[in-house]
Amino acid sequence: MAHISFAKWQGTGNDFIVVDDRSGRFPAADPALVRHLCDRHFGIGSDGLILVRMPQAAGTAYHMEFFNPDGSRSFCGNGSRCAYAFYSALLPQGKPPDQLKFTAIDGEHTASTVHDQVNIGMRDVTGIERLSADMDLIHTGSPHLLVWVDDPEGLDILPAAHVHRYNDRFKREGVNVNFVRWKNGQLEMRTYERGVENETLSCGTGVTAAALGAMARGLVHRSCPVRTRGGELRVDAEPWGEGFRAIILAGPATHVFNGEVEI
Image (cartoon, rainbow, N blue to C red):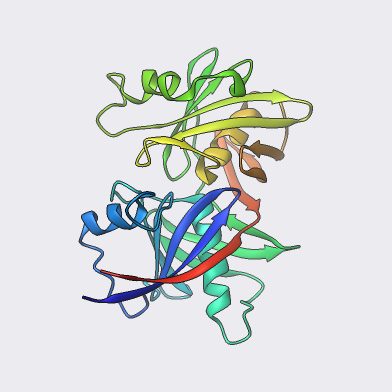
């Protein structure tokens, strides 16, 4: 048996198990262990597991490895914000440089803290696929379907999302399904996440996708406030050809508790 120390962090209700794995000892090749730890009944419970590892590229501070609750790997926006806050707390002064770089499954990112908000630099987006008058498809580190509706809160989200998640186009590799609307100067949304296969209170890559979708539709320009069930975030971006660049996801990242688990 082995003991693993971990921290629980959350970003607008998106909660994560975060492990300092700079020693490289965590058995990352065991997806069953990841599934067990993320299980809310028999494990710790979370929307994903994050390993903070030694840097893999020159000029970066660390590498973030993210696992969905089903054991699959992907990029995670809110998870990145929590990983940065966790890493900052590990430093001698508990405070990182004004900005640092880290790597994840989709490449290099920037991270910083501005007025108690954690800002993550997201990958450039080269374009948005308009599927219909009320649906857009966009990749922001993970694939996101945006479904524009009259009232996200009025939906029975699981059957509504399954219509898209398991259709012929997406059932093999999966897609995150976001139900969104623009109201009173902000974006409101609910997200069904692949890998979790359920609704989450927030999704950073989904928030980014929804904000860029709103910008592409001319509802807002360059800076978009977004309200999720777990709290409020902001996305800033610059138009770039058919897509966007200089994309920043900003929001809170909060430490919940520390613990130790026996495996």
